Image 1 (tube, helix red, strand yellow):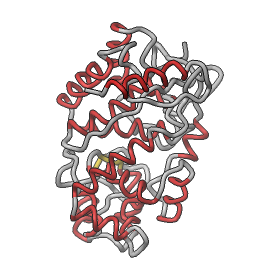
Image 2 (cartoon, rainbow, N blue to C red):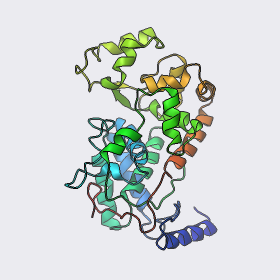
Image 3 (tube, rainbow, N blue to C red):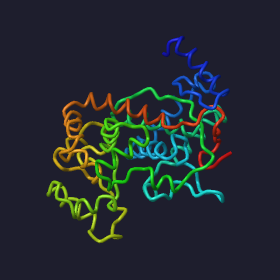
Length: 319
């Protein structure tokens, strides 16, 4: 239970956020306006992940891909309109990002108990945390009070979300552009201990790269033909051992040259991030601690607060 002093401080922030355009995020933002918000989201995520383990990784990825495009504002959830082309069909998202139906379900439940109060951007942030916990990973205190954007940008999604083809220097630059450090980069990349990737995103690695475990590469080729356009959407787990359990196997895989994506293996290629990968491969508790801290930091990328944006009643379209 939050201490009374902390709750009072949050209430002050809540009130002030409506008076200023730069309100701060606060963990108790819905304490008075929608007390059941967090429990409602948690129950829905628990149900979705129980139905399909992979959904945990998908919900985590939604939050990541949202925050990297003009901040954590729920823009990734918007369908196209006559005035803008949304982010769902951007190259990093098309035929890849999923879980929209789960977010719709959560939003519907929240609208039934406290209409127009909980933002879609906050739903994404809480669902990401709850998904990680459901799959055995760490928890963290989610800062709340984000508001939703009224527009989206396919162009920004194409340029801001780091591609699986990036080398280490480009990855560091991409994360730095969002205010995230190299430590954050390596810690957040650990999210690839769960989930799957499409053949089109790892084909070049398994057929053309030399810094890859030979048996690992061979085992992937049957489901990912060398010809472009053939089997592009066939899936492979990012961590073959435990793809639905959140732990530190991802880093152990990198040390064995079994990173599925080019961008994954770049973190352990004789460069500046090798030592951090080694540390996480040996110490899961440190990885969990750093991952949780990095998620809080990522969730604070340019949030809309105060009078900016809106609280969408339908996450797929502006009010």
